[in-house]
Image 1 (cartoon, rainbow, N blue to C red):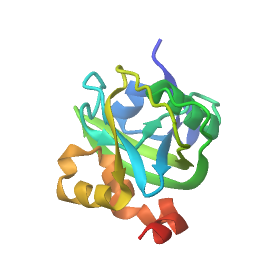
Image 2: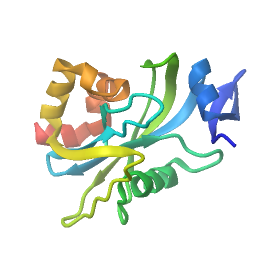
Image 3: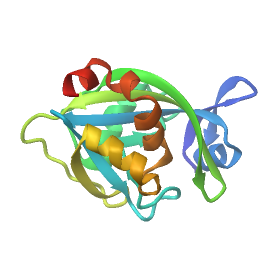
Image 4: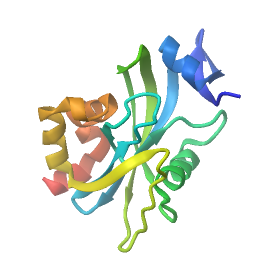
Amino acid sequence: MEEQIPAWVDGQLTPVGKLEVHRRGLRHKAVSVFLMRGNEVLIQRRALSKYHTPGLWANTCCTHPHWEEDPASCAVRRLREELGIIGVFPSFADQIEYRAEVGGGLIEHEVVDVYLAEASSGLLIQPNADEVAETRWVDLYDLAARVARKPEDYTPWLHIYLGQHMDRIFGQTAVHRA
């Protein structure tokens, strides 16, 4: 059975199959996490087997909550499932809505709860090969510049987050790092 995620159908939040949500471009809930280490952010290159945006670089992790799953619990779950990261508890940073074509006739129209977390020293990262091709720590502002220069190497949502909402997401953190 296809995974059911929370999407709005005729104004009502309803469990809908994930692929159907993206085919129809339905507005739906999502969660994104940025794991920081000082001035650096952990990014991932999506596995080539992903059904959309394979091989593109994205923020630390992003997903859709299960039906009736709390967004904060979802963030912790996906850190563990995608990257093998445990013992990190992200803090809510902001909620952002965007709509973007992601290839293959699929559309992400997400209402995203964005979370930030600070990596502890010695944090163990064990990417799930079904989800993540590779990871890399990069300076936040270098990343924003790279995304602006070569957006085709990055997911549409990372381009939107860093190009349009960086101050909202990173707030005082971004000011202190500048």
